[in-house]
Length: 264
Image 1 (cartoon, helix red, strand yellow):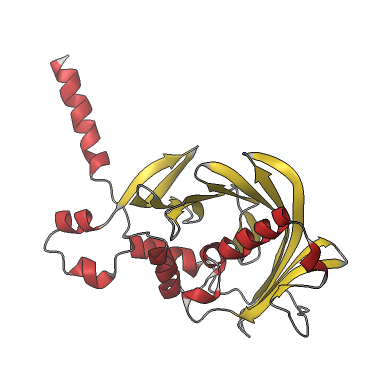
Image 2: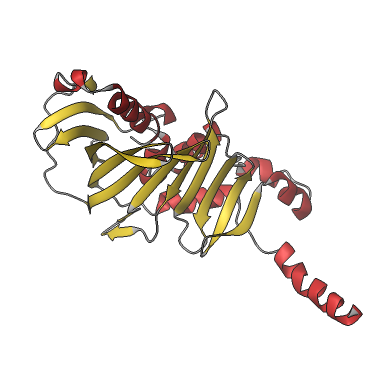
């Protein structure tokens, strides 16, 4: 038994010191995958939940992005002819111009992506900070990174407790994001696998959003296209509720607020 315990302990040593990429490198790999994107179009069905169960309250949303012109447009609809909410803006120069999940999934700039994660409490260490470490052990203590399994997938994990970012080990694609808002409310976004692949774009088929561990929203990707020619933007956007959108009920109004706060 003594020899067995010694053998098990010996086998565990490499796992404890397994190579884990720096947090900044992981974010750079995520951003790099989208470097060649020129434009995209995404259609989604958004379903609202109450008490962890789906409701009949839902809406459709279409996102258009022209990376060359740095323009994004999002339109929420009850059906093909009834627009209820719309925004149009320049794709961010700073992290405040786009919602966090938009940044994670579509941002091509690693520096601004790091800022977005830092704003959510995810501890991304700069190369300058890590290079000042006097030893590998000190560097490891500065980094809050780990290698864990999420469901059936090996995952890199940045952060701990209520602030964590999980990426699939082999692809560096997002699996989970956990964070707290300014009021201390815990949120989680889970990204469905396997991702949809369209030319130069990888995008999750489903996104689930939870508040305090309870499901509040499901976003189903209906169509996704990359490098689309001739995107048709609205000549002018209201950047808010449309005339028809002014009359939507309170549940839908709150759902739209949640969607545009975190997703688009």
